[in-house]
Length: 81
Image (cartoon, rainbow, N blue to C red; front, side):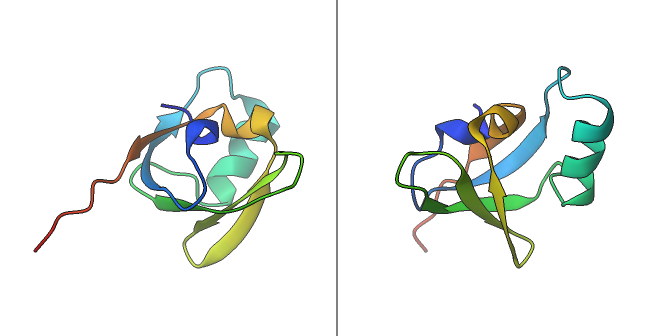
């Protein structure tokens, strides 16, 4: 699923970047920590729904929907222990 499809408060693990994300845009996301296996949580959604703030690696990063559409994630399932 796409990162942009997560709802407020949901947590997921990054599985990769779209092949359509190339060049400078891809490098920027990788430099910000959007790499496979990174845990990411939706922290804040602007009143108009764009941009959305995500928490990853102890950092808060805002992305536009067009950027978040290029990040693939898998929802984290909480286990009861």
